[in-house]
Image (tube, rainbow, N blue to C red):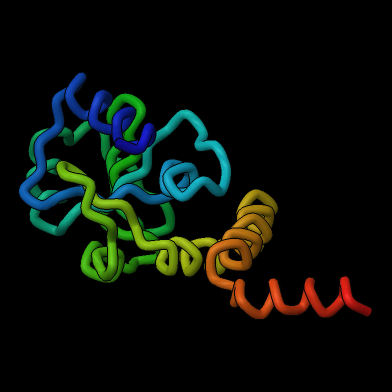
Length: 153
């Protein structure tokens, strides 16, 4: 099992937090999950609308509003109803199922970084993600053929 998933599950069990729908790991932990960079100390999650309402009643003193994105800070978790006012269902598409949690798809993670690219940290993430895409999705047969042709020249 991926170390990020082990860490998130451990932290979820410490509180414990329960969800009606599986939360989606986003942010630095998703970056680490894909091997792009190490995460920071917090764990960012997107939750369903239903879970948001449950958390609103259970954790009224832990609410946070970030430019209209409503969420909660609970221990090391930043739990969000939306990012850029886009909700759970958007981030659910192609998310990786890891049992108790989902991990945002690499494509949705890229979209998140593009939306925040005016922040230097996220601009650096975009460069790292570009390298991730090159490493994982470039036509390896073509690259191998090109290396052979260059060696013969």
